[in-house]
Length: 97
Ligand SMILES: [Zn+2]
Image (cartoon, rainbow, N blue to C red; front, side):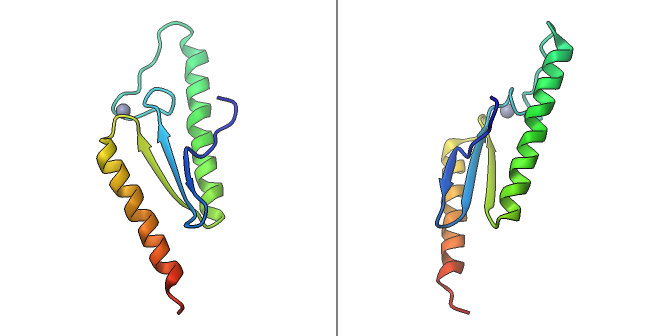
């Protein structure tokens, strides 16, 4: 987990998709705090979360649309959201205004 890459990228549409694990990325519904080595885990998971925010900020600054989903989300709904985002970006690409 030293470096985070985009899970699914649409370079032409500039849409980046991240599928975040509930535990590793601090899902508000499923985040748990291991009892053993609690401080170490807290620091490690906090680092993951702040790295997620940095990654998102960098991509947005570069003009990307960033979509983040939790691993517990319905895959069908996730796929529909991704398709809609890519389609929306593609639509604006073809406008010559
Ligand atoms: Zn979750």
